[in-house]
Image 1: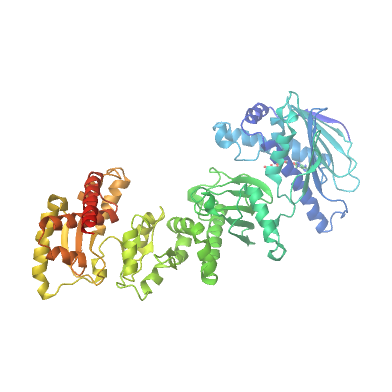
Image 2: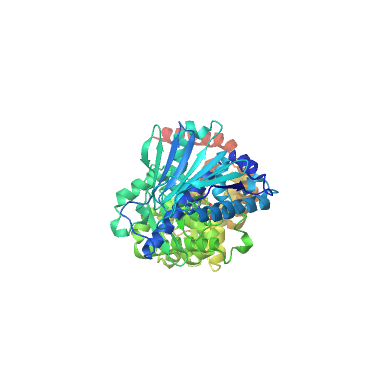
Length: 616
Ligand SMILES: Nc1ncnc2c1ncn2[C@@H]1O[C@H](COP(=O)(O)OP(=O)(O)OP(=O)(O)O)[C@@H](O)[C@H]1O
């Protein structure tokens, strides 16, 4: 070949200085672009070999990245398709250059931050690192001659016979200035590993302290058929890849040939408090890393888990500017998005249907995820809303429907729930005594979730275990109770005086005689008061304001021995003492005894103990 030289273009003389400016924002691009080109070159050769248009070889396809500190250069070498002289001229002098120039012209007005990392700048990204770039290449074609191409940052290039004896390409980046990469091989190794960990072609890294290191996993475990997977190996892969100390609960492998996507979703064990933290979804394009947690691709709720997505039809670089919300309906990103929703929906649904026991075992880890998913995602909600389970007060799991169908449930239209197992333990205890059931809605997500459930189950009322419950105990009065009620009302008003406040007094015969008194909230006004507390309008410890906001009833059981004793007692001060004590206990069991009343409660309790001692 004749030596050929020239200048690339005058119009785009800024190209190198602009590329160099980006060096400081996104250095990894060079490796991503050049190794991707090397990988493409290998794939092209394999395709030709498969078609019988190129000779098959026994030697493995490979990419080698060498850090030559002595010569102060980085070499990216492949044994792929290579280029003829004409191809170098066409693909590098014309196409690659014009691609980069177009890119610069189009985007030089934009903020560099918003564009860098969003588009591939191709071969010419090499000039982000080097002032002098060379190509040594030899085409796979029979009798092709090796070519060497050199280009300096003044845009002058030269083409002459090259030195390669085997087909393939070396791209050589000569650094002028001391480059931080040259003194830190570890950094380069980590970049290559990050971007090409799952590339199908073998990638090696060679540097002074490294020897030759095999960088990637060409047959990753998550791509293997189910029958070949050893669970322990998968667990180890997960823990290492995501830096988690716990094994995943389970995983879903998925593949859609139509979309050209495959991947895996790991359901996380949340015992380390990771429940509300996003997981990590790494996105690859044919094994080349594209990005992480890209919100246009991964539904928000799915992103609470971790996973890997490999899509062969995805642009190498995905960004907000390439995926616009309004285009989502039919673009690649929305297909991937829906595919992930569907995979998770199908997996959890069949888990519920086919392995309920295991589903229940995992539920503490899935609880927030499933509820959040239902609130976020229509596909998921349409299937999973009826598969949400709640622990009941007996420690069993129930769906809302199962709870309603339950024989022991007195009122079919009401779901009773406890929002704080400890604070409402007295009510839970009473429910148990009465052989009634309630569900535990004690997770932070349960309150917003409950509001959604009320919309879905419009025929069902959700009532907290300490609210509107008197009907559950089937309270009723007989004809001869009227006098007793009147007397007791007088005694209670006398005993409590202003303490009763706005609280309504209701005296009745409850079927369960062990109950003395109970404070029952009005569900609606209680919710309002809770909401005010949530928005900081009421302080959590200030019960008096909360009491004023919520309508409450003091329920007194005429059927109870202590209450009957009060009724009969001639000793007014004794009756007052017992009434106040019972009232305090009722407030306490609801967690609303004011701090100012604690002292009198203690004194009263001590007086009662003294009386007891004296009577012994
Ligand atoms: N290692 C290589 N082996 C063979 N051909 C190569 C190699 N590197 C680049 N080329 C050729 O040069 C062309 C231009 O490369 P460049 O990286 O600029 O763009 P691209 O790879 O086509 O697109 P993009 O980088 O935007 O994905 C390639 O299409 C390819 O034909």
